[in-house]
Length: 37
Image (cartoon, rainbow, N blue to C red; front, side, top):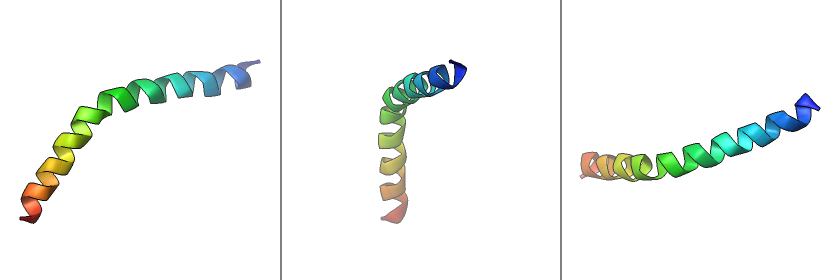
C-alpha cells in the first residue's frame, strides 16, 4: 500500500516543483546567456 502511495506523492511534488522552477529556470538560462556574451 505504501509503495503505491509513494510514487503518487513524488509525482505531486514533481508537478509542484516543475511549476515553481519554470520562472527560476528562465532566469538561470537568461543569466547563462548573459555570461556567454
